[in-house]
Image 1: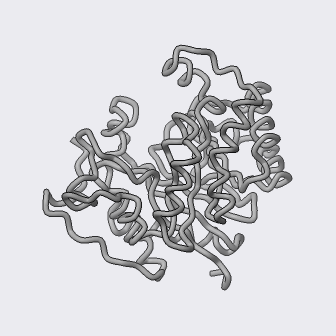
Image 2 (image 1 turned 135 degrees about the vertical axis):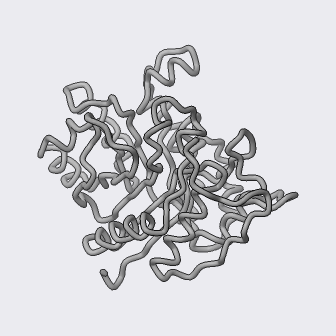
Length: 291
């Protein structure tokens, strides 16, 4: 392992207050009023998912800074208007026509994190159908031009990107991390193992619930608890990447009933990082269930 490697291990999002997959009672104790503050007792980073739906208010972001300890950092998911135009149109009823005002608004939302030195990376996650064609390359190039001043990580999920050697070349030239993700694999899925292309590494673990991946909803799709053996397998990949980069981010997105913090805590321990043991939930035992 690289001697100077810094690991940031956490979850994708910290607030899941409602629905069948809620974290209340599974991670957050009853009556807890400060979820982010509680979360930051166990992890040194979080991936902000709410920014995917709309640029967060800078005032809210400044409050996140105040509620987390020194050394805690955030990575932020890029607004869907830049990466998922069809989803944006469906959600808002308006076309995803990008303006400089949109770009400036999103940049302003990040300023409190940048000023407080709590900005980790910016994640551009693209949909599975985002292909390596002329239109796709133009979008990827535009994201780099407008947001390349941050540590930029891209999650490309269609096999056309890993089939093309020029993808790695482009990412290396612009110091963009190619996100290694763990999720159910299908015929059009990107390669399982991707090269290091930047001076930092980025991992996302979505679970392996192939049964509900396409048929489930935004909760049941992530109903998967990694086993101890699987967690060690993922940890080995994170450690291997650290041989090439001094900074490594890894986030669990299997958020059903707080599976993600359980697995993240297991990885923290496997990496022999300082950790606080998450209390065992009283509501019901955590177990793998795909039904």
